[in-house]
Every structure is written in C-alpha cells, then in structure tokens.
Length: 187
Image 1: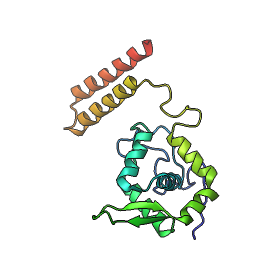
Image 2: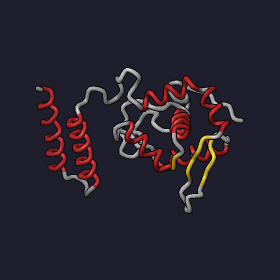
Image 3: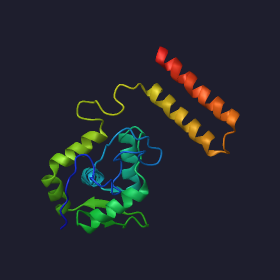
Image 4: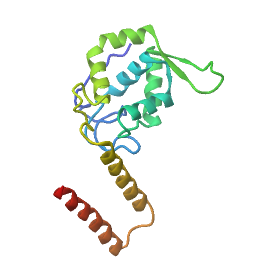
C-alpha cells in the first residue's frame, strides 16, 4: 500500500492535481485560498463515499453545493482520484445499475485508512463546510451579494470571450468596473 505524506499548505512543488491548492480552482472557481492541500481531495471523496455510495457526478455536485458554487472540481481531477482510490483498494466500483455509470462504495481498507487519517479527513470536511466555526470563505456574505458577484463575474467572462475589445470599449469596460468599485467603497 502507498504511504501518503500530508503537506498542510500544499505540496512544496505544486498541487499535483488534487484540486484547489491556489490559483483559480476548478471550472468557474474563483481562487481565494486553499480548500484542499496536496491529497486533500482524496480524503474528502473517500469520506463522502463512506457517508453514501455515490457516482462521480454526484460527488462533484455535492462538493460544488457544499462550497456554495465557489468551486466545482473538474471531472479531470475527480475521476483520476477515484481511480487511484480504487487501485489502492479503498473503494470498490459497481456498474450493476445497468449502464456505464460507476458507483463507488468504500471498502474495509478504505474505512481503516479514514480511521488512521481521521484528523486530516475531518479538516478537509470542515473546509468544505466553511470551517468548524463557520468562518469559511463565504461566511457573512448575504446570498443576494454572492449572487450579484457571480452575475458580474459571468457577465465579464462572457463579454471578454467574444471578439476582442476595441480601445474605446476597453476604456468603457474599465470605467464601469471602476465606478462600481467606488460606489461599493461608499457603502
């Protein structure tokens, strides 16, 4: 069995594909600090599977909901992590539901691994819940403010994804953002 080394602030040489170790996060993610350090996503996924056997898509959606839409792990991160958990013998896969969808169930070895790493697992789950004391990345933000922020980010991404801005459009775009910032400072 492979031994895991836990780096509380991420792997010294980078993330190595376990999600959210800084930067922009997953699709639609907005950064804002680490939620999972090196290997952290595998602990969270294994705990979620221990709570309820699940399909990969369900796990992605559950994490996205727990983080209020701020981060959604990409299938390109989740499925290789699930494959690793299967190879390590921590989960088993069932496709008996008559299709290609794989349902992951924790094994006894997986339960033992979680028990041996309870502190790390609890930390990862607390991070997904916004922290034990509720002081997580979104604590204190009214839902209408979160919605408005997400709407603004989406509008900016959609506009910037179209044709390049002309010099005049770039000035107007920046002026709108500067004006909004100034108005918010006055509140």
